[in-house]
Every structure is written in structure tokens, then in C-alpha cells.
Image 1 (spheres, one colour):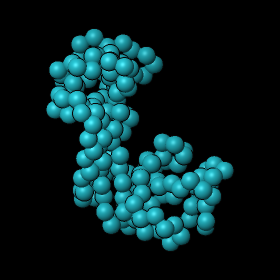
Image 2 (image 1 turned 180 degrees about the vertical axis):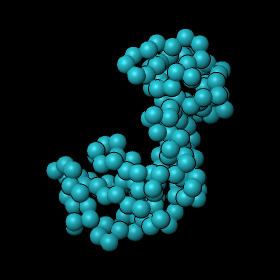
Image 3 (image 1 turned 90 degrees about the vertical axis):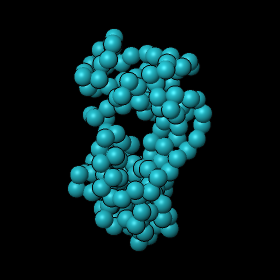
Image 4 (image 1 turned 90 degrees about the horizontal axis):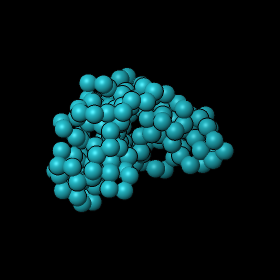
Length: 164
């Protein structure tokens, strides 16, 4: 989950009526933060007026594969499968929840395979945000935005672990 708090973007995890803000960037440590390993964290109430937005973010591409029928793919960014994408060069990872059907897919689990694709081969780029709090008010809503390739890449870079 992502939190926008006091003008910064943080990882967030929900703890009932509190949110844990997490960052790797010491310059984002506004006020009092705890330190652990290579990150900092702070608990704030969910109703804190400085907590403007709380959401999940997902990146989708429209891509036509030679063997898979799916056209809309959730970009996995290599977080789960161990394959390292290179977003700066326009390379991202997509997955299927079954065995690979040809050599262009890499089997990484008994019933799961992934593939690195080039964003230049995609027809559409969508950024999805699932809001739990927006503009300071609690509510659940989903926003999907179609964006161009550069906006897609730059947004993915912004939300990387090391940039939060």
C-alpha cells in the first residue's frame, strides 16, 4: 500500500486504526521515526489530517503474446518471480499461473511462468489506483488511467522500493 503524507510518498501498512509509514530515505523522516535495518517507520492514526491519500497501485499493459490468449497483463516488476526487469530500458515482467507453453516463457514454479517483455511491444499502458483514503476522506474507489509509455515508466520508477 502507498501513503501520501506531508507531501511525501511512503510504503504503508494497515494496522486497524493506524498506518505504518515506511521509507528507505532518511530525508523523508518528518518528525519522529524509528529506525530498523535500512529503513525507517512511523505509526500515524488513519484519521491524521496530514495523511492525504492511501492506495494500492498496479501497472497494466495491453500486450499480444504468441501463445497466451490474455491481452491485459498485470506487470509484476519481478517482485515475486525473481526475474529482474529493467524498466529504464523498457523491460517488464508478466506472469501466468500455469506451466509455460513455449520457450519464450520461463517456468519459475510448478504451475507458474513468467516472461520479460518490451514495453515498445505493448499497445496500451494503464495505471490503476485503489483508494482507501483520497484527499483526506475515507472511501473505496478505483481509478484507472491510460497513460503514454514515458509516464508509465516514470511512474513505475517513482514507486520502486528504493525510491519510497
